[in-house]
Image (tube, rainbow, N blue to C red):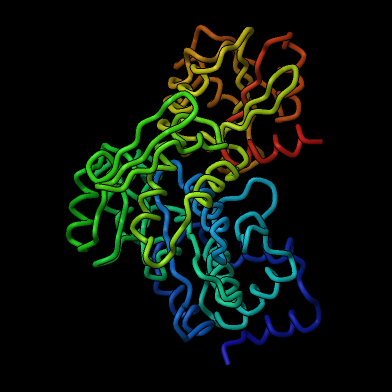
Length: 433
Protein backbone atom coordinates (compact mmCIF):
# COMPACT_ATOMS: atom_id res chain seq x y z
CA UNK A 1 0.00 0.00 0.00
CA UNK A 2 2.80 2.40 0.88
CA UNK A 3 5.61 0.85 -1.13
CA UNK A 4 7.69 2.81 -3.55
CA UNK A 5 7.72 0.60 -6.72
CA UNK A 6 11.40 1.20 -7.38
CA UNK A 7 12.27 0.38 -3.76
CA UNK A 8 10.13 -2.74 -3.86
CA UNK A 9 11.96 -4.03 -6.94
CA UNK A 10 15.31 -3.39 -5.31
CA UNK A 11 14.33 -5.22 -2.12
CA UNK A 12 12.90 -8.19 -4.02
CA UNK A 13 16.00 -8.67 -6.14
CA UNK A 14 18.54 -8.25 -3.35
CA UNK A 15 18.37 -8.10 0.41
CA UNK A 16 20.47 -5.27 1.77
CA UNK A 17 23.12 -5.92 4.39
CA UNK A 18 23.19 -3.72 7.48
CA UNK A 19 26.06 -1.71 6.01
CA UNK A 20 24.09 -1.19 2.80
CA UNK A 21 21.01 -0.09 4.72
CA UNK A 22 23.00 2.47 6.71
CA UNK A 23 24.68 3.84 3.58
CA UNK A 24 21.27 4.09 1.91
CA UNK A 25 19.76 5.97 4.85
CA UNK A 26 22.51 8.58 4.70
CA UNK A 27 21.76 9.22 1.03
CA UNK A 28 17.96 9.49 0.84
CA UNK A 29 17.49 12.65 2.93
CA UNK A 30 18.98 15.98 1.81
CA UNK A 31 19.88 16.98 5.38
CA UNK A 32 21.52 15.04 8.17
CA UNK A 33 19.18 16.61 10.73
CA UNK A 34 15.58 17.71 10.28
CA UNK A 35 13.84 18.40 13.56
CA UNK A 36 10.09 17.83 13.68
CA UNK A 37 7.75 14.94 14.29
CA UNK A 38 5.12 15.18 11.55
CA UNK A 39 6.78 12.93 8.96
CA UNK A 40 7.91 10.48 11.62
CA UNK A 41 4.47 10.21 13.20
CA UNK A 42 2.83 9.42 9.89
CA UNK A 43 5.26 6.58 9.15
CA UNK A 44 4.93 5.24 12.72
CA UNK A 45 1.15 5.10 12.49
CA UNK A 46 1.46 3.14 9.27
CA UNK A 47 3.99 0.84 10.88
CA UNK A 48 2.22 0.38 14.23
CA UNK A 49 -1.32 1.80 14.35
CA UNK A 50 -2.02 0.28 17.77
CA UNK A 51 -0.94 1.39 21.23
CA UNK A 52 2.70 1.09 22.28
CA UNK A 53 2.54 -1.21 25.30
CA UNK A 54 5.83 -0.88 27.25
CA UNK A 55 6.26 1.83 29.84
CA UNK A 56 8.54 4.60 28.49
CA UNK A 57 11.33 6.44 30.30
CA UNK A 58 12.90 9.23 28.23
CA UNK A 59 16.34 10.62 29.09
CA UNK A 60 17.57 14.01 27.84
CA UNK A 61 20.39 16.38 28.75
CA UNK A 62 23.66 17.84 27.53
CA UNK A 63 25.87 15.29 29.31
CA UNK A 64 25.27 12.09 31.26
CA UNK A 65 22.40 10.66 29.19
CA UNK A 66 24.18 7.48 28.18
CA UNK A 67 25.29 6.76 31.74
CA UNK A 68 21.74 7.20 33.08
CA UNK A 69 20.36 4.87 30.42
CA UNK A 70 23.01 2.30 31.37
CA UNK A 71 22.05 2.52 35.06
CA UNK A 72 18.34 2.20 34.33
CA UNK A 73 18.93 -0.73 31.99
CA UNK A 74 21.17 -2.57 34.47
CA UNK A 75 18.99 -1.97 37.54
CA UNK A 76 15.68 -2.83 35.88
CA UNK A 77 17.25 -5.87 34.25
CA UNK A 78 18.57 -7.03 37.62
CA UNK A 79 15.00 -6.68 38.92
CA UNK A 80 13.88 -9.16 36.19
CA UNK A 81 11.98 -6.60 34.13
CA UNK A 82 12.10 -7.04 30.35
CA UNK A 83 13.97 -3.96 29.16
CA UNK A 84 14.77 -2.29 25.85
CA UNK A 85 17.11 0.68 25.52
CA UNK A 86 17.90 3.03 22.66
CA UNK A 87 20.98 5.29 22.64
CA UNK A 88 23.04 7.25 20.14
CA UNK A 89 25.53 7.66 18.68
CA UNK A 90 27.42 4.38 18.71
CA UNK A 91 31.14 3.92 19.24
CA UNK A 92 32.02 0.86 17.16
CA UNK A 93 28.90 -0.99 15.95
CA UNK A 94 25.55 0.48 14.96
CA UNK A 95 23.95 -2.42 16.90
CA UNK A 96 25.09 -0.78 20.15
CA UNK A 97 22.20 1.67 19.78
CA UNK A 98 19.44 -0.88 20.37
CA UNK A 99 19.59 -3.33 23.28
CA UNK A 100 16.90 -5.80 24.28
CA UNK A 101 17.24 -7.61 27.60
CA UNK A 102 20.91 -6.63 27.87
CA UNK A 103 21.79 -7.86 24.36
CA UNK A 104 22.59 -5.81 21.27
CA UNK A 105 20.05 -6.44 18.52
CA UNK A 106 21.42 -8.51 15.64
CA UNK A 107 21.96 -7.48 12.02
CA UNK A 108 19.10 -9.62 10.71
CA UNK A 109 16.56 -8.08 13.08
CA UNK A 110 17.75 -4.58 12.27
CA UNK A 111 17.57 -5.17 8.52
CA UNK A 112 14.07 -6.64 8.84
CA UNK A 113 12.95 -3.55 10.76
CA UNK A 114 14.46 -1.27 8.11
CA UNK A 115 12.61 -3.21 5.41
CA UNK A 116 9.31 -2.72 7.23
CA UNK A 117 9.97 1.00 7.60
CA UNK A 118 10.94 1.36 3.94
CA UNK A 119 7.75 -0.42 2.90
CA UNK A 120 5.65 1.99 4.98
CA UNK A 121 7.26 5.34 4.33
CA UNK A 122 6.20 5.72 0.68
CA UNK A 123 7.34 9.17 -0.48
CA UNK A 124 8.04 10.44 3.05
CA UNK A 125 11.71 11.24 3.59
CA UNK A 126 13.43 10.11 6.79
CA UNK A 127 16.83 11.00 8.18
CA UNK A 128 19.41 8.44 9.29
CA UNK A 129 18.50 9.07 12.94
CA UNK A 130 14.77 8.85 12.26
CA UNK A 131 15.20 5.47 10.54
CA UNK A 132 17.09 4.21 13.59
CA UNK A 133 14.53 5.54 16.05
CA UNK A 134 11.65 3.92 14.18
CA UNK A 135 13.59 0.65 13.98
CA UNK A 136 14.17 0.70 17.74
CA UNK A 137 10.48 1.34 18.50
CA UNK A 138 9.41 -1.28 15.97
CA UNK A 139 11.67 -3.92 17.53
CA UNK A 140 10.67 -2.98 21.07
CA UNK A 141 7.00 -3.37 20.18
CA UNK A 142 7.66 -6.92 18.90
CA UNK A 143 9.51 -8.21 21.97
CA UNK A 144 6.80 -7.89 24.64
CA UNK A 145 8.90 -5.67 26.88
CA UNK A 146 7.89 -4.16 30.20
CA UNK A 147 9.82 -0.91 29.84
CA UNK A 148 11.89 0.93 27.25
CA UNK A 149 14.49 3.62 27.93
CA UNK A 150 14.91 6.18 25.17
CA UNK A 151 17.89 8.54 24.98
CA UNK A 152 17.07 11.82 23.27
CA UNK A 153 19.47 12.51 20.42
CA UNK A 154 19.28 16.29 20.14
CA UNK A 155 17.28 18.66 22.31
CA UNK A 156 13.93 17.17 23.21
CA UNK A 157 10.77 18.86 21.95
CA UNK A 158 11.35 18.09 18.25
CA UNK A 159 13.66 15.09 18.59
CA UNK A 160 12.53 11.82 17.00
CA UNK A 161 12.50 10.08 20.38
CA UNK A 162 9.74 12.47 21.49
CA UNK A 163 7.39 10.77 19.04
CA UNK A 164 5.85 8.77 21.90
CA UNK A 165 4.64 10.10 25.24
CA UNK A 166 7.00 9.27 28.09
CA UNK A 167 5.60 7.86 31.33
CA UNK A 168 8.57 9.47 33.11
CA UNK A 169 11.40 11.75 32.02
CA UNK A 170 14.90 12.36 33.33
CA UNK A 171 16.89 15.44 32.31
CA UNK A 172 20.50 15.02 33.37
CA UNK A 173 22.03 18.48 32.82
CA UNK A 174 21.75 21.50 30.59
CA UNK A 175 24.78 23.13 29.03
CA UNK A 176 25.56 25.09 25.88
CA UNK A 177 25.58 22.70 22.93
CA UNK A 178 23.93 22.41 19.50
CA UNK A 179 23.31 26.17 19.49
CA UNK A 180 22.28 26.21 15.82
CA UNK A 181 19.30 24.02 16.69
CA UNK A 182 18.46 24.74 20.34
CA UNK A 183 19.47 28.32 21.15
CA UNK A 184 22.54 30.06 22.52
CA UNK A 185 21.69 30.15 26.24
CA UNK A 186 20.70 27.66 28.93
CA UNK A 187 17.17 29.04 29.26
CA UNK A 188 16.30 28.47 25.60
CA UNK A 189 18.08 25.12 25.52
CA UNK A 190 16.34 24.10 28.74
CA UNK A 191 12.94 24.93 27.29
CA UNK A 192 13.67 22.70 24.30
CA UNK A 193 14.82 19.83 26.49
CA UNK A 194 11.71 20.17 28.66
CA UNK A 195 9.73 19.20 25.58
CA UNK A 196 10.04 15.51 26.53
CA UNK A 197 7.98 16.13 29.69
CA UNK A 198 4.27 15.30 29.74
CA UNK A 199 1.29 16.71 31.64
CA UNK A 200 0.77 14.97 34.96
CA UNK A 201 3.75 12.66 34.50
CA UNK A 202 6.85 12.56 36.77
CA UNK A 203 10.01 14.29 35.64
CA UNK A 204 13.42 14.62 37.31
CA UNK A 205 16.03 17.33 36.80
CA UNK A 206 19.28 15.81 38.04
CA UNK A 207 21.56 18.80 38.70
CA UNK A 208 20.98 21.49 41.30
CA UNK A 209 21.42 24.43 38.89
CA UNK A 210 18.11 24.40 37.01
CA UNK A 211 17.71 27.01 34.22
CA UNK A 212 14.65 29.23 34.61
CA UNK A 213 13.63 28.42 31.03
CA UNK A 214 13.41 24.73 31.86
CA UNK A 215 11.31 25.38 34.96
CA UNK A 216 8.94 27.68 33.07
CA UNK A 217 8.45 25.12 30.31
CA UNK A 218 7.92 22.27 32.80
CA UNK A 219 5.35 24.37 34.67
CA UNK A 220 3.52 25.24 31.45
CA UNK A 221 3.42 21.58 30.45
CA UNK A 222 2.11 20.62 33.87
CA UNK A 223 4.67 17.90 34.58
CA UNK A 224 5.28 16.71 38.14
CA UNK A 225 8.82 18.01 38.48
CA UNK A 226 11.36 16.79 41.04
CA UNK A 227 14.64 18.66 41.45
CA UNK A 228 18.02 17.55 42.80
CA UNK A 229 18.78 19.36 46.03
CA UNK A 230 15.14 20.18 46.69
CA UNK A 231 13.20 16.94 46.30
CA UNK A 232 16.05 14.50 46.77
CA UNK A 233 19.62 14.63 48.04
CA UNK A 234 22.70 12.46 48.16
CA UNK A 235 25.89 12.36 50.18
CA UNK A 236 29.11 10.57 49.35
CA UNK A 237 31.73 8.78 51.40
CA UNK A 238 35.01 7.06 50.56
CA UNK A 239 33.50 3.76 49.43
CA UNK A 240 29.73 4.26 49.63
CA UNK A 241 27.01 6.86 49.24
CA UNK A 242 23.50 7.58 50.48
CA UNK A 243 20.34 8.92 48.84
CA UNK A 244 17.22 10.41 50.39
CA UNK A 245 13.86 11.74 49.24
CA UNK A 246 11.35 12.68 51.93
CA UNK A 247 11.15 9.79 54.37
CA UNK A 248 12.83 7.33 51.99
CA UNK A 249 16.52 6.69 52.68
CA UNK A 250 18.89 4.49 50.71
CA UNK A 251 22.13 4.20 52.65
CA UNK A 252 25.40 2.33 52.12
CA UNK A 253 24.94 2.27 48.35
CA UNK A 254 27.91 0.94 46.35
CA UNK A 255 29.99 3.41 44.38
CA UNK A 256 29.03 2.91 40.70
CA UNK A 257 31.39 0.87 38.58
CA UNK A 258 31.54 3.69 36.02
CA UNK A 259 34.29 6.14 36.95
CA UNK A 260 33.98 9.87 37.48
CA UNK A 261 32.61 12.37 39.98
CA UNK A 262 29.48 13.01 37.94
CA UNK A 263 28.40 9.36 38.13
CA UNK A 264 26.93 9.75 41.63
CA UNK A 265 24.84 12.67 40.36
CA UNK A 266 23.69 10.56 37.40
CA UNK A 267 22.89 7.57 39.61
CA UNK A 268 21.01 9.76 42.09
CA UNK A 269 18.74 11.05 39.32
CA UNK A 270 18.10 7.46 38.25
CA UNK A 271 17.17 6.50 41.82
CA UNK A 272 14.65 9.34 41.89
CA UNK A 273 13.00 8.16 38.67
CA UNK A 274 12.80 4.62 40.00
CA UNK A 275 11.40 5.90 43.28
CA UNK A 276 8.65 7.75 41.40
CA UNK A 277 7.85 4.62 39.35
CA UNK A 278 8.04 2.19 42.27
CA UNK A 279 4.35 1.25 42.04
CA UNK A 280 4.68 0.30 38.36
CA UNK A 281 8.27 -0.97 38.37
CA UNK A 282 9.25 -2.12 41.87
CA UNK A 283 12.99 -2.68 42.31
CA UNK A 284 14.55 -4.52 45.23
CA UNK A 285 17.52 -3.18 47.17
CA UNK A 286 19.63 -6.04 45.83
CA UNK A 287 18.68 -5.25 42.22
CA UNK A 288 19.58 -1.63 42.85
CA UNK A 289 22.99 -2.54 44.25
CA UNK A 290 23.65 -5.05 41.49
CA UNK A 291 22.73 -2.60 38.75
CA UNK A 292 24.94 0.17 40.15
CA UNK A 293 27.91 -2.18 40.31
CA UNK A 294 27.35 -3.80 36.92
CA UNK A 295 26.31 -0.86 34.72
CA UNK A 296 29.04 -0.05 32.24
CA UNK A 297 29.47 2.21 29.24
CA UNK A 298 32.50 2.41 27.00
CA UNK A 299 34.21 5.72 26.42
CA UNK A 300 33.11 7.45 29.64
CA UNK A 301 36.33 8.05 31.56
CA UNK A 302 37.30 4.51 30.59
CA UNK A 303 40.70 3.51 31.93
CA UNK A 304 42.79 0.86 30.17
CA UNK A 305 45.66 -0.37 32.29
CA UNK A 306 49.12 -0.63 30.85
CA UNK A 307 52.27 1.37 30.18
CA UNK A 308 51.33 3.99 29.35
CA UNK A 309 47.92 4.11 31.00
CA UNK A 310 45.20 5.02 28.48
CA UNK A 311 42.05 6.99 29.30
CA UNK A 312 39.16 7.31 26.82
CA UNK A 313 36.40 9.90 27.13
CA UNK A 314 33.77 11.28 24.74
CA UNK A 315 33.94 14.78 26.24
CA UNK A 316 33.15 17.11 23.32
CA UNK A 317 31.67 20.21 24.94
CA UNK A 318 32.86 22.65 27.58
CA UNK A 319 30.88 21.15 30.47
CA UNK A 320 32.02 17.61 29.74
CA UNK A 321 35.63 18.77 29.40
CA UNK A 322 35.41 20.45 32.81
CA UNK A 323 34.14 17.20 34.35
CA UNK A 324 36.96 15.32 32.61
CA UNK A 325 39.51 17.77 34.02
CA UNK A 326 38.13 17.19 37.52
CA UNK A 327 38.33 13.43 37.12
CA UNK A 328 41.91 13.68 35.91
CA UNK A 329 42.77 15.92 38.85
CA UNK A 330 41.64 13.26 41.31
CA UNK A 331 44.10 10.71 39.90
CA UNK A 332 47.68 10.47 41.06
CA UNK A 333 49.87 10.59 37.95
CA UNK A 334 53.59 10.00 38.31
CA UNK A 335 54.44 11.22 34.83
CA UNK A 336 53.17 13.38 32.01
CA UNK A 337 49.69 13.42 30.51
CA UNK A 338 49.49 13.54 26.71
CA UNK A 339 46.11 14.38 25.19
CA UNK A 340 45.17 13.06 21.77
CA UNK A 341 42.04 14.65 20.36
CA UNK A 342 40.02 15.78 17.38
CA UNK A 343 36.57 17.29 17.17
CA UNK A 344 33.90 18.46 14.79
CA UNK A 345 34.07 22.06 13.66
CA UNK A 346 30.72 22.99 15.20
CA UNK A 347 32.03 22.27 18.70
CA UNK A 348 33.70 24.87 20.98
CA UNK A 349 37.29 23.83 20.38
CA UNK A 350 39.00 26.57 22.32
CA UNK A 351 36.68 26.28 25.35
CA UNK A 352 37.21 22.51 25.49
CA UNK A 353 40.99 22.88 25.36
CA UNK A 354 40.90 25.65 27.98
CA UNK A 355 38.98 23.40 30.38
CA UNK A 356 41.86 20.91 30.22
CA UNK A 357 44.70 23.42 30.04
CA UNK A 358 46.12 22.67 33.50
CA UNK A 359 45.80 18.91 33.19
CA UNK A 360 47.58 18.30 29.87
CA UNK A 361 51.35 18.46 29.31
CA UNK A 362 51.38 17.77 25.56
CA UNK A 363 48.72 17.81 22.83
CA UNK A 364 48.51 15.46 19.85
CA UNK A 365 46.02 16.51 17.19
CA UNK A 366 44.80 15.12 13.89
CA UNK A 367 41.95 16.02 11.49
CA UNK A 368 38.88 13.80 11.24
CA UNK A 369 38.32 12.32 7.80
CA UNK A 370 34.91 13.95 7.63
CA UNK A 371 33.56 17.13 6.06
CA UNK A 372 32.31 18.18 9.52
CA UNK A 373 35.72 17.71 11.09
CA UNK A 374 38.03 20.47 12.24
CA UNK A 375 41.18 20.95 10.18
CA UNK A 376 44.66 20.54 11.62
CA UNK A 377 45.06 24.31 11.40
CA UNK A 378 41.88 24.92 13.43
CA UNK A 379 42.85 22.38 16.07
CA UNK A 380 46.38 23.75 16.28
CA UNK A 381 45.13 27.33 16.66
CA UNK A 382 42.69 26.32 19.42
CA UNK A 383 45.46 24.66 21.45
CA UNK A 384 47.85 27.58 20.99
CA UNK A 385 45.20 30.10 22.05
CA UNK A 386 43.94 28.17 25.08
CA UNK A 387 47.02 26.23 26.21
CA UNK A 388 50.00 27.88 24.60
CA UNK A 389 52.44 26.67 27.26
CA UNK A 390 52.00 23.04 26.17
CA UNK A 391 53.59 21.37 23.19
CA UNK A 392 51.45 20.67 20.11
CA UNK A 393 52.10 17.76 17.75
CA UNK A 394 50.18 17.32 14.50
CA UNK A 395 49.56 14.02 12.71
CA UNK A 396 47.55 12.91 9.68
CA UNK A 397 45.59 10.17 11.47
CA UNK A 398 44.59 8.82 14.86
CA UNK A 399 46.94 5.88 14.51
CA UNK A 400 49.91 8.13 13.72
CA UNK A 401 49.07 10.46 16.61
CA UNK A 402 48.74 7.52 18.98
CA UNK A 403 52.06 6.01 17.90
CA UNK A 404 53.79 9.37 18.33
CA UNK A 405 52.32 9.77 21.82
CA UNK A 406 53.36 6.23 22.78
CA UNK A 407 56.93 6.77 21.56
CA UNK A 408 57.18 9.90 23.68
CA UNK A 409 55.80 8.22 26.79
CA UNK A 410 57.78 6.77 29.67
CA UNK A 411 56.78 4.70 32.70
CA UNK A 412 54.06 6.44 34.69
CA UNK A 413 52.84 8.56 31.77
CA UNK A 414 49.21 8.70 30.64
CA UNK A 415 47.63 9.06 27.20
CA UNK A 416 44.20 10.67 27.19
CA UNK A 417 42.16 10.13 24.01
CA UNK A 418 39.04 12.27 23.90
CA UNK A 419 36.68 14.28 21.71
CA UNK A 420 33.93 13.10 19.43
CA UNK A 421 32.35 9.67 19.62
CA UNK A 422 34.11 8.84 16.37
CA UNK A 423 37.53 9.56 17.90
CA UNK A 424 36.89 7.34 20.90
CA UNK A 425 35.23 4.61 18.82
CA UNK A 426 38.20 4.38 16.48
CA UNK A 427 40.60 4.48 19.44
CA UNK A 428 38.75 1.63 21.14
CA UNK A 429 39.09 -0.54 18.05
CA UNK A 430 42.77 0.31 17.84
CA UNK A 431 43.83 -0.18 21.47
CA UNK A 432 41.75 -3.32 21.97
CA UNK A 433 43.50 -5.18 19.14
